[in-house]
Length: 392
Ligand code: FAD
Ligand code: DHB
Image 1: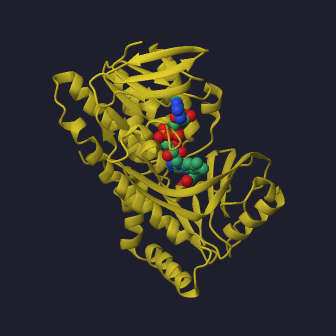
Image 2 (image 1 turned 180 degrees about the horizontal axis):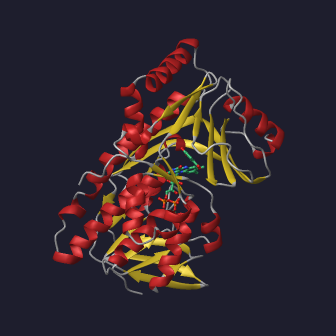
């Protein structure tokens, strides 16, 4: 097999890169080690920044998102049973976020890829990347019990945090920055109409909780739990009790309950691998960086990375200039670190940290009070939440 760009991983990063390259007339092969059903059913992120929405629209994959996505011009931060609205549109000159499930983005991107007729292979195994220091890297894998090798010009490592591409970078050039948080999120998808149409991030003495949604009939909820907790320790009644307790307000705000359609526990980590490029291998999305989900940044950072990479590759194949590809890591990391900072800050402000003393609790509450009570504080949160620009 021969292609210009071999893409490892069919998450949002790999699939969007494939679409952006196709639009530039650049050939690619996408290999994914899971099945199409699995990838299309994987419930994860829900919030798209304005910039990510613009990129998906410009890529020609925004039709269903424009019809079904829920545009929000604000969200709430809640503590002491009181809500404080962050008016995104007013504080950012009209910018909004769109609530549209990551698996819906993935479905739209897969449908678009299939329409192009270019290769997208699911259920591959034993992916191995070699020759990234040469002009002729290769990606070997097995598919339907046969061995294959892709000869290519570039490899895009879009294979997520547990993928194989990051490990191909020489250990002596890779710097890892990591922070693991002493808590996790238990997330549920509920067959019940959302009680209101804006998200709520709640701080409570018993821990963090988040109210979100996927559609006018499906609610999405998260509750802070211990990282070692098992789902078996969280029967329905316990989940509902914690959600009601952490989210309810003094003026009688109450969640709609319903059957739980899906549940899972997500560990929380901040992680950055630098640089994001070595030789002919480019890392993008979760393969290079992870954020705790409190700032809703993970999928959006992945979209930003591949937008930069696609432009760099378009320049390379267009007029032979490599100046953008050469600055890929630097351009992405500037934005990534700001996403890391915001995600860490929202996480630090809104969670109960086991072992924190009374002074630290009061600092956290004062911070929440400041950020929600001052126009400057709310503006800072709003500007980051709707997404910082990509600075080329
Ligand atoms: P992934 O989605 O992980 O895709 C990588 C792909 O590579 C996968 O399909 C995987 O199967 C495949 N793969 C792995 N190894 C190999 C291999 N060896 N060979 C071939 N294929 C391989 N982000 C937001 O922006 N907003 C949110 O609201 C938000 N909420 C979240 C809530 C939860 C509960 C979780 C878990 C995450 C959330 N995120 C959020 C983060 C977001 O889901 C990720 O940042 C996003 O999935 C990154 O996309 P990606 O394509 O880089 O990686
Ligand atoms: C959702 C997930 C997040 O991490 C977040 O910050 C907001 C919403 C969601 O899944 O809807």
